[in-house]
Length: 293
Image (cartoon, rainbow, N blue to C red):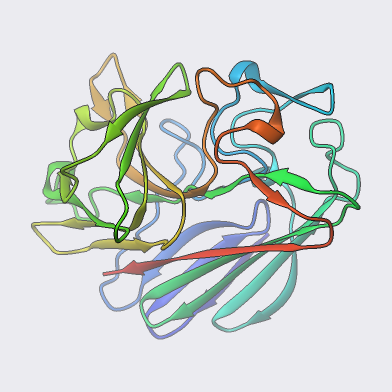
C-alpha cells in the first residue's frame, strides 16, 4: 500500500512496506527526484536501515555469548508498517517488533517514522523505543537515492556534491574493503566533489562530522540538499558496474547513526564501532531534511 502526502510544492508517495519514500514530485518544476527502483541497477529507493547499518563481518554478531545472523542493513526496510496518524502534508508510521525478529535480534522495540512537508522540503524523523527491561544496542540510517541526471540534456558529470562540515571538528574519511570499514584519515579538502563514474569504483564514500550535503547540477541548478546536523556518519553511494566502468543513474546520500563493521571488529554487538545504546524504556530520536530545488 502507498500513502500520499502533499502541499503546494511537493507530492510524496510512501510505501507501507519499510515506510519507504518511493516518489517525490515537484509541482512547480515538474521533476521527479527519487530513483525509480529499477532492479537492473538497484531495486530500492529509500530504505530505512535498522538495527545495523552496512555489513557485519561474516554477516553475524555476538551478544551475551550467543551468535546471531544479520544481513546487510538489517530487517526494518522489509517490515510492514501501520499508519499511526495522517494529515494532508504529514504522516506517521509505526511498527512493533512483537517477537517477530528475536531469531536475529534479541530485543523488543517500537519504531516510528514521521514524514512532514514544509514548502519544498521533506522532514524525516525517527523514534526508536526500547521495550525491554535492559539496555538495547542498535544502529539506524537513511538510504535515499536521487536521480542523476534529473534532465534529459544533462549528464552525471554536470552534478557536484557540496559539503557543510561540522564546526570545530575534523572530518574523518573511511573506505570499504570487502564491505568492511578502514580508516583513511582526516579529509582536509572536502568542499566539493564532482560526480563521475569512477567516484564509486571502490564502493561508497564515507565521512564523519558532516552536517549537510548538497547535490546540484551546475547546468540547471536543480538537485537536493540533505541536512543531518549532528549525525555521526554519512555515506554517498551509487551502484558501480566494473565490467562497464559506469555508475547507476542515481546517487544516494545516507545519513547514519551507525556504520559497517571495522575490519578488525571483535564481532560483539555491544563493542561495535558506531553502535548506539538505549536504556530500558527510553526513546531515541533523530531526523534529517531533504530540500528539493
